[in-house]
Length: 158
Image (cartoon, rainbow, N blue to C red; front, side):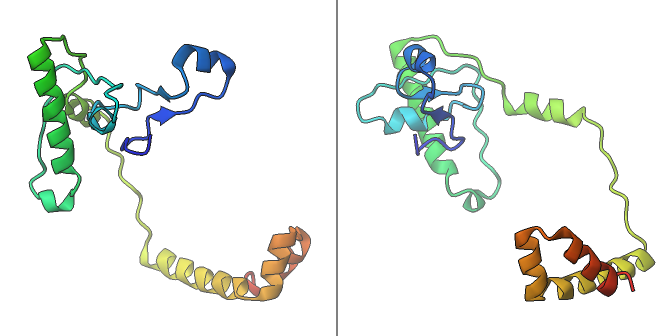
C-alpha cells in the first residue's frame, strides 16, 4: 500500500466491500498503472496491464529523482506482457490529457493597485500585531467572538 505514488490502495471499510474486493482494494480511477505495486509485491499477486503507454522523461531528470524507478518498472511490466502475449488495458496518454487541458479557458487574475497593496499591507500589519496578543489568542481558542470583535474594532478600525 505504501509504494503507490498516488495512494490508490485502501482498506475496505464495509463488510460488502470486503466481500467484493478482499482485505485490500485499489481505486482504479486514481491508479495510473506505473507498475510499482506489481514490482514490489513479494508474492507476485498483483498484475498491472495497460495499453498505449508512452514514457516521456522530463528534460531535467534530476528534478524528478523517482522517474528512473518508474520508467524501469513500467518497462519491466511491458516486457512481461510481451513475453506472455497478454492483451494490455488501455490508458489515456499524456498528449490526450494536455489536449483536454489546453481547451480549457485561461482566466486572468486581477491585480491590486499600488494604493490597494499599501492598504492591504497596513491592514495585515495591524492584524498581525493584534494576533500577537496572547489575550486575543485565548479568546480565539475559547470562541469568545464578542470580545474579539470589540478588540478588533478598537485596534483595526481606528
